[in-house]
Image 1 (spheres, helix red, strand yellow):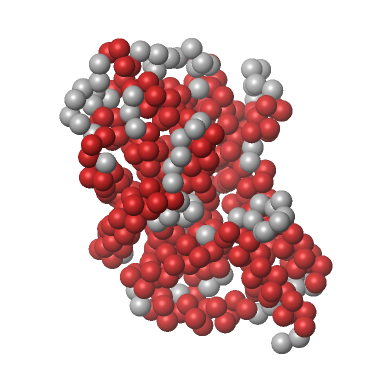
Image 2: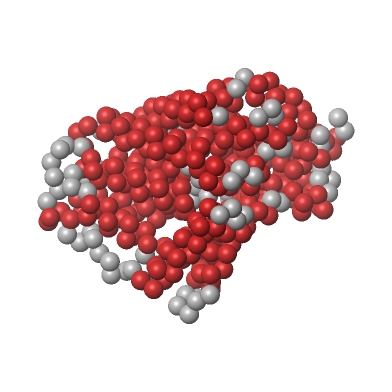
Length: 412
């Protein structure tokens, strides 16, 4: 192998390791900058020509992600997520009901609005609720993180790796949800059961008093005109999904509708867009695109083909291991070039979506959503330890993966 190819391969490996760990020692670099620097180095080395690098950018995925960010920002500014949190408190009569409602709200909203966004806004709300109701926040934080990951498996818009899979596979939105929504529902039930079992002392059958709920159900920060518009845009987007409109176009149309406004300054909206995530994706698209130009994809395909021939259990196991080694988005991008060549591409795509998503619940480092919950809680003086998460994450992950694999084996 020529020297340039060896250097390119080392850069690809270093980039993937850096993305998996999230940083390099002694350098102020995050996943976005690591992916961007790696992609630029590969272009400079000639591992992938500039024109090929542009072509490797999956604009459908980037547009979908951008559109969802605009939609989520408007709903957050309108107070939609705070309103949902206040309804959870009103409806919950006991600690167990509160846990069930937190799991349901986190899971359902993650399926529609992207799991990372939901945990970002829901973690402070969960902590506020726990303070008012004098509850131990740890089981509820675990509920937010695990339910957001599990719920996101249900739809193409639930998480970044599903967006990539949805666009690459061409599976219709309703078909995707029809196959994987039952996995999400059963998985959220597993999350509830495991947390209640492991934190029995925190879930007595006593009822909350009215005094405990005072001050939590506040709607002072709700901007009702913006909220109605955001809900309308969301409804139109979902309707577009149902009638077969391209998913990225439906999301972009909803975002464009919300940008026609007299109430919100565009700068306030664009300031909340996670540009680093878009840069991260763009860099990874170029890095994985260089695998094809270097001829490495064919070697990877030779390794994966026998695994895919092993059926759903084998592909599930490999996806879980790879997701925890290099993170779920890079794992999906590595699979993406050769899944269409497998004997049953649709089955492989759905298994990949299920396994890489549910694998994120294994450890605190397993998904970005988990880290957001832990960091957001830390800023408010609550420590969610690696061990506390692992105690819940292992049984939830193993049981939900078992259920997911059995369900897909049954219906596919």
